[in-house]
Image (tube, rainbow, N blue to C red; front, side, top):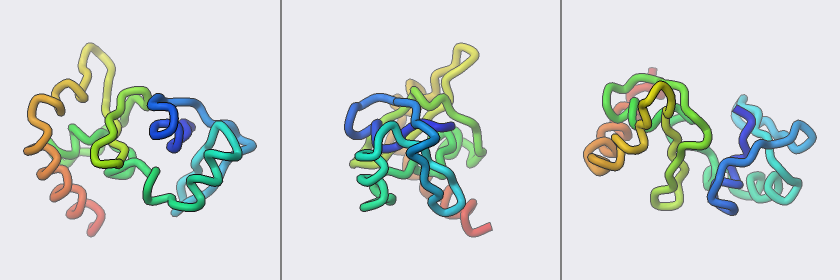
Length: 117
């Protein structure tokens, strides 16, 4: 959605990227807020790319469903970026936090099955 994937790690917040600092990685266009962040991403894309293809981690863990996210609702777990749905009075990050271990295990299983399809 145009947010700088590196800023989640370096600034601990979602920052909109700029078109002049874009890069196409695996068919996905990433936008960065600075040349420095783009360079960091280019050195190690797997460090910064969101888990579960950028879909809501809670929804993947709960049902295996791909649900759009709110880019400002995120959590970094073991140096990996997880994004969450947050709209219509539902913040799935809060739901994730209540049962993170089980949801995380299920999300990994569901995601591995989804990417094999």
